[in-house]
Image (cartoon, rainbow, N blue to C red; front, top):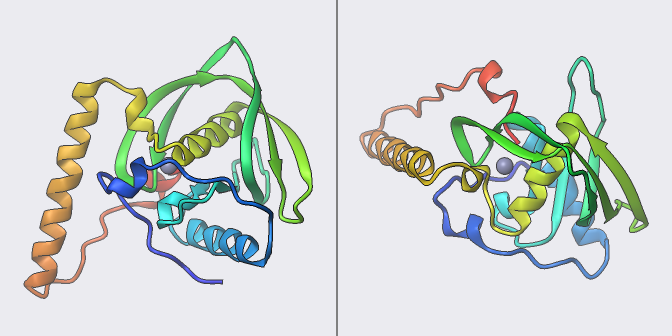
Length: 192
Ligand SMILES: [Zn+2]
């Protein structure tokens, strides 16, 4: 397993549509394992393959909250086959949009069909935070970020701040300053 670099917005690769995998072979399993390790290291509760620059329809999740402990969930070619009319609102964050959070409205309950790590077709009905996370990750496979669900005004403000932070980090690196990592555990808890 290996920890991979997580791309951050506005990286153009995050806006691309990922391709389905033909089957869950050794290469896909390796990708799933790398993604899990990268997600735990971040730390985050979900990660999609395009976030590490692999345009394959693969996502991983592991929610560890008092009210919900899922353990690792690995999905290839996930597809939402049913969504509730009822909506739920969660404050979302994203490892590719560091330090920014915003309320996003999504269906409260979804059923997902996917291939598991053994290549078996499975279906899972997700509610609450898990429903939000799985929809957030599937969005990544279609080049959609949570900031695409909020107002253009707020989205552009976040993107400007991210660009500014990146330029400052590059300047600090050029001047030999150590990289500052302001993120706290609490703020990262919602990063998916
Ligand atoms: Zn995300």
